[in-house]
Image 1 (cartoon, rainbow, N blue to C red):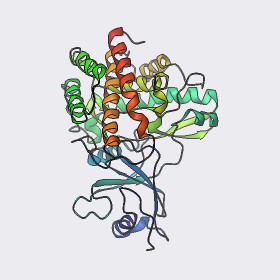
Image 2 (cartoon, helix red, strand yellow):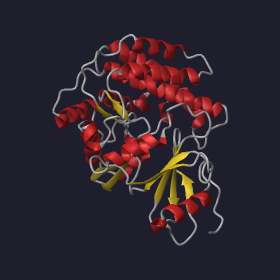
Image 3 (cartoon, helix red, strand yellow):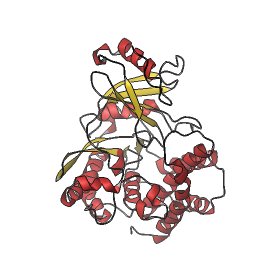
Image 4 (cartoon, one colour):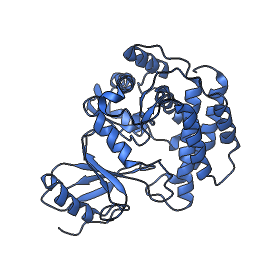
Length: 353
């Protein structure tokens, strides 16, 4: 096999040898070619061409890997279990490469590439009609409701998490992640953390499979300009069993993130006037699909701001330490404080706004 171009975090020649040995049915006629897909601010994602079909490889980020935050095995497991129930890419294999160091030197998994587009910038809305984008916004809610309707035991995910005490554990987990990434004073984020910890919703909410980072730019969109559809849901690294309203709160936070100071650094194409429905309509569509009323989302939307702020602070920490790959990291840290302020406003509102 001819020598291929080096890609940060991935030995493309090693991947070619592994594929020939373990999956000869997927071997192509020439050398593999790989490129880091735009984004990569958490787990790294590579498009791989030159095999019998286009592939995608996922691996943990380079450096400052927080415990349990980048678990390839869990992500591979949930995608495989949900195939045929919600739109997900077909998985190929999960590999522990920590000893051999042949491909990444980490756990990684390979899946088939799903054709379509990730809508990560407002300019990409131009390829779709306003009516199509409105329908896409409604479908986002319906796919999420379908996910939350999955019986974990029926798909082999009954032990994928512990729904009881989920929200309390989330606060403990993200407090720990925040502490592990501290490098500057963030009083608003500290205040939001304490506000949320002191007002965790009481138990009683139904539990289900939680994606953990459900948003437009974690989906592949395909179809005609007037009839887009969700072709695949991506980035399941935070999936577990828990309170489904966490996903709905996260979707609501992302629905308005570009309106925040510094929000231009965030990915996603949802902007006023493009055709997407108001978030209240998205909530209504979710309720209609799930057959149950949606309660007040104030705490969940505030928690979404807190969670993303902690994630971005971890990315900022890696950026300042020179441990990131890709572009745009220099602007990430500027969004942390506005997210904390927005979270405090949501937490204080006492109602879904």
